[in-house]
Length: 438
Image (tube, rainbow, N blue to C red; front, side, top):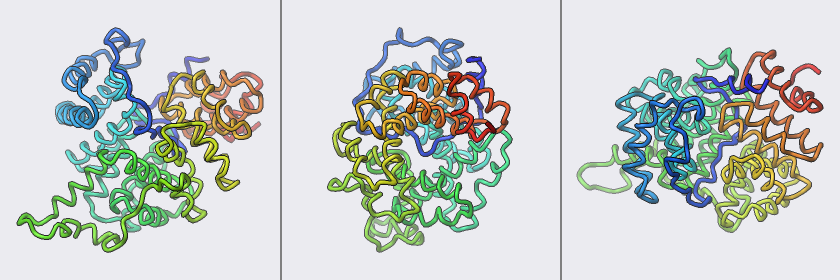
């Protein structure tokens, strides 16, 4: 039955993340540039259409020998040209293939996907049409970019705008995935809109009436806060800067006048928000109200790793001294960050074993959720859980997988079929995670 899970891919986007997007972009080592002999030319074996290969190789030839921000700028400029020529979905397919060719792109692919979403909205400004054109690739960064650009364009973040934006996806028959991506994207968008003033963004998330919606929005806000700290030149930061420059006086007047429009957003005159604190690896979680702490700690190891030089063991020890209720959540975050180092299941399991033993199962939960998020397939999670040895930890892994499956697909029969592919003695654990009847 393994093939059935590989077939459960939704072109409109189909996988849930509990804010598990791989975000350790600025702390992992530089990826190697892959030889063209290292990857297939698209088609059945790679999962990438063969006709995307020429476009990806053209981008690689133009930008692949560059480094750092120069390389990022080069790729983003060419992706923008590709977007104008062929549209959103083919551009995302080109990015899929480019990530196979260039390890730097693979590492930063979520950020490139944000760029495509931002540019796509700026080209059409039809938020629903553009959003639906994105793909689920690279933890659905394209979806998040569209929402960021939408808020920047509307210049409003009141209850009417925040509450109505994602309603078209409320009754999606395929599951809650598009709804989640939209609401999670609101968190990203609000943080950008409020000049990366995180408390303002979280307060705007509180305008949502449903707790699941609020939690999803909080997660996007915390993720954007980490991205702002670790990648200050990422596309959303440029989007905000473009808005400031656009409204600045052209006569070379007072530089502060360029922030007049942002003054209407409730941040004028306030002390700028400090995204991270080098003296406190638990900040900003350490200063957050209780209702925000869970989603904060689901991202916090990205901050810890950025501060400690990418030392997983040290991050695990930091999680061990988090508030007791947040320690499992923190170790789940660590599992998500493990997948920034490797997409190999055995290597990911080994990295988790290097961490704190009492919370190791939570690291596995973070890994399995991130694998499913990254691939949009239950099979990637099943593969990981199979390599976990300890029965108790394996139980947790399959339960976490079931939680992902519940949002990956809406149909209970399909959920049950996917869980049935688990190792026989752990099928029930997966079903419990998916909230299927025993």
